Image (cartoon, rainbow over all chains, first blue to last red; front, side, top):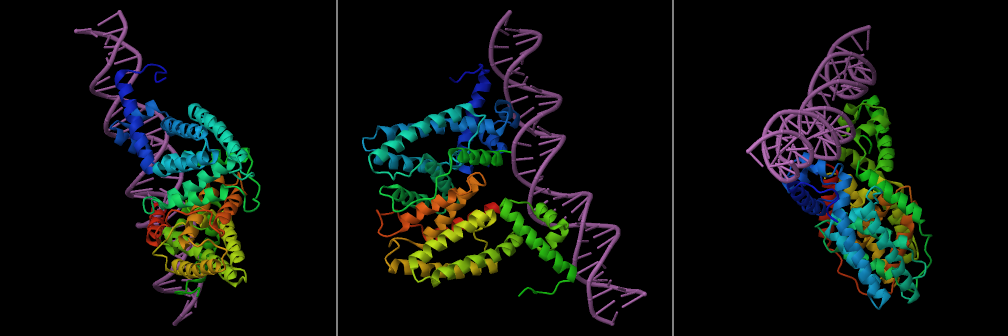
Length: 215
Length: 215
DNA sequence: CCGGAACTGGATAGGCCTTTCCGGTTAGGT
DNA sequence: ACCTAACCGGAAAGGCCTATCCAGTTCCGG
């Protein structure tokens, strides 16, 4: 559904150029990339950028709706795997690889943008799939019983920390951390865990992070 | 050795007030706290602050030398533990708790400041202790054999990501992540790991992070 | 082909940041 | 008690950021 209210042909062309430029810039520089750098990369003026996306948050939402689609696809692929544990671990590695390949997406996975309806709807859909994925892996006896969906968000936060800190200097480091985490997820559990944070607490945390990131 | 070149009494008093204020502000707001907010908290003017610490990096270095002492103390305590594995896990939890209680320190542990001789010297001393700690735990058969000192830095980076992302909204979340990581460290290893990043790569990563953080 | 709405780029406003500058003030040896 | 060097606070310079404004340009229906 690309046509909300049909744009003039040149405006539509510029909108597309902005989106591809923003995708590249956010991937390379993270969400802190400036609007000016996006405009420069797109070869348009600042006014054009802000007319189409009145606030930086709108641009971020538009850019990462697509990535969230890829996230949902990864969930679907995992659910289709006959071995739930293999599906889950494959899924985790895929998503963490997406974080490593896209600094912006790494951050987006640790935040929530309530005004970005499309993005958050896709995230919710993916979330329900993740819950089923977890239940399946638990039922198969491969995933520790005290695992929660919030643990996946925590993993994304941890991986974002590793990816942001290591950058291009230690490109494979995140892979090792993720492998360690996956081994700790596998049943049987080696010991008890502190209580998982409440879903609402995680939501508040993600909300706060986004407010702090987009002024 | 508090007296490099003796200051006038009022200057010495202000220096102390700046340091305690900076400790509080960096703990609460992380390394991104502004110099102005430190000056305000300390009740001194900006000129006073910058005369005593010509660049923000100097202030950061001075403030976190103390914290690095606490880090070194934690290493010493761990080395004194008769059970190397217990010492190691206790150490990890102590240091990660320090990260959770001090946003600035959480970041400092993922960076390096080559011009801050004192801080880096303490870090090196602690590092040698950590190497011994790891060797001891491996020799006792409690720690997986493919564990490396770089894994501890990666853990700090991951924990910094969790702590920064969850903030006050999910205060205990980091504890769960750390518990999971520790279980994955325990021998016997559940499976092979991707190669550990080279020490030099980690150094470069930490260097880049600090340059990116202190303009 | 023409009029006007939609659109454009670049200048600009206004915010926060680090760092420097300057005129007044204070400590402390003599 | 006094002189001077060290010290002080606040204002200002210069940078980067998001977001807005304006005068000129381009699309497109009639």
